[in-house]
Image (cartoon, rainbow, N blue to C red):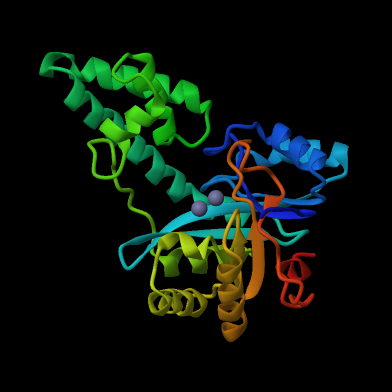
Length: 291
Ligand SMILES: [Zn+2]
Ligand SMILES: [Zn+2]
């Protein structure tokens, strides 16, 4: 079951891998009854200015946020960082610059590796350039990711749809699955704290860890300065929510939540995610610490 919530603290726009423009996202949130919205694009603040303008005109309370990728024990982990009001963006932006560079480097590598697989040697350089250029056009100045390359592979006729592109070329273990040199969990968390944000471990159930391993992750996160835990991410079982609330309380982590919205589907929308437990107190809620 999904409920309609008045706050959604984890959403994506076209500035990373969402499908709506930042303005469209805010408008949709408003239509769905969301009053407090955090835009948390992957590793970039590029969508914020546009989102803020729309939020002001509609009276939506927009929180500055970002979702940062990092690594812990070889596992890719996401941290949602939310900036309390009145904090300036400069430090947070500076912390994200190497992250953006790493993403660009990875994108360049994807283009090269795809061309190496798809074309004979004399044509590779030209194909790399073509893939790179077209992918950038799709990304429109935002973070270049695998979905953009999937679209290019469709256009060039190597596959008939995005799903096939991932299955043959871009999915896990395929030629275009290039690992990025993300920072460690500790580096990412410490940097985000120094930039004035409140840091939240995103979608803890999605890493498919045992309870014991998750507990180690949460302890490592907290030791690095991590402050919060997403107790609800999109659709999840009530038993998972209860478990995460218990784990957050055991460590004194603040509780956060969100849809992790990327695009409107019959199952996914801004402000729609599994119910929050009524037992959460004001001090346990991350909202309390964001004003
Ligand atoms: Zn994520
Ligand atoms: Zn996300």
